[in-house]
Amino acid sequence: MKKILFLILSACCLSACSEFLDREPENAVTFSNYFKNEKEVQTAVESMHATFRACFGSVDNRLWRQRALNFDYLDADWEKLKENNFQDTYDKYSPILYWDNEYRVVAMANMVIDNIAMAELPEERHDFYLGQAYFVWAYTYFRLIQYWGDVPLVEHMEDISVKPRTSWLTVCDRIVGYATEATRLLPSDGERRDAEGRAIIDKQIPSSGSAWALLAYVYGWRAQLNQQPELLSLALEACNKVIDSGDYQLAADIQEVTQSVLLGDSKEAIYELNYSQLAGEENDIGACIAGVCQVYPVELNSTPSTPRFYMGIEFATVFDMYPEESDDRRTWFYELEETSRLPYSETEGFAYPYKYQYPLRYESGYMEGEVRAYENNEPLIRLAAIYLLRAEYRAKTGDYGGAVADLNVVRRRAGCSDYSGGTEELRREISRERDRELFCEGDRFLDLVREGFVEDLPGFRDMTQQDIENGRLFIPLSRTAFQNNTQMTQCPYWEQRGF
Image (tube, rainbow, N blue to C red; front, side, top):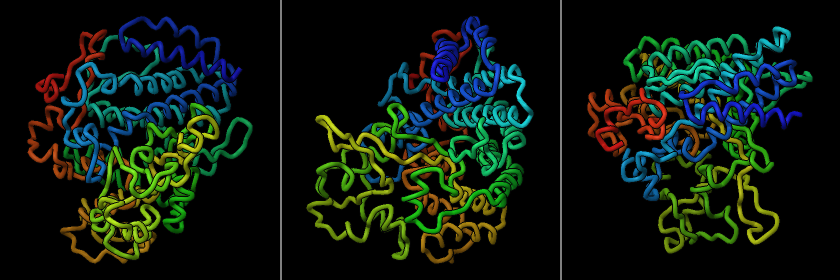
């Protein structure tokens, strides 16, 4: 029954989104037959999370979050995206520029929000499931405004009428409202329970801490892009809620980061994509960043001379990034001391990232032994990132002592000395520490935008204020979104470039 209900719910929501905002809600009546008890609510919520994972674990979503990867060599498509050059990579109808996957997640969240009352659950269970839907809605819309700026606002599953793009500031107000409700409705990390009363360890199931962490990012984004520094006090409060909660704990050392935190469900993880070894639920090598940046010693029969076709980072860059010999990330992310002594004829000067250390291999057939996926989960928010986020906000608000203290928490865990530079360089150093700690995870492009350092990237060095207002920071929208929506518009910056 569980699988059947999953398929029905998914089909109804996906069909409602397939011709986004352009037809009558003919499937809406279907849901009156469900949401009769907690099991069915739980199945609907699990379907929502599965749709969320499929969306945010996809290649395109990882591209948008990570398109400023600090590699010296990137293949043509990655390099063009780093330069903000979409017109030489995609055409105006390219499906990768379409937001249908994100709106599928929105539809699933709205389905739960609109129908959960029918189950007449006890208040605590009702709030737990409703809080999850609010969080997923808020997280998804935050990504939508980070990627596309102004986007259509859909707050009910039956609302599929033709809509224009809504100001991202208006959408941001809704995001804050939903995320704030999630902080109230959701239990703490250690108090999450399933329908049978068992403790939940899956970090894709959000908690109140997940919602506070999301708010910390949302307030910081709006403070920077809309020039509202007064919001940084709210961003700091949200960071404090996470750090001071006692629900999360940094791993003891970097070895534990690679062998526990990145594997999944650790005390350091706040929110992550949860994968398994089941078909369709794997962290597939074709989508995850490890699959395109890790070759030797992971790939079967690879050697130090095996070419790295997609991206490469030079030893010199890694040594510059991690200047202290005591920094354990040199060892556990790269095995730097050992591999840097290999002959140049084998390495061609490129280092060997090895941050994700749990490949899953084909067990039979002609690809036996080849990597098919990674056992690792994908942390979307972990505690080290929140310490660095609070350091960033403290530095922006003039609390340099507090910023240095947070920075040093992350540095000390890695085996580095305390920060000894001045206040004028502090924000840059926090950004560099984020690069060191979150190498090949996190949201480097989006982080640079929020930090105010996006003009460091080659595609933004000549950016003007008018470019920002015209949408240069966002990605172009596929013309597919215009086919059934006469009110849809392209942002001016990309319309001028043929999209």
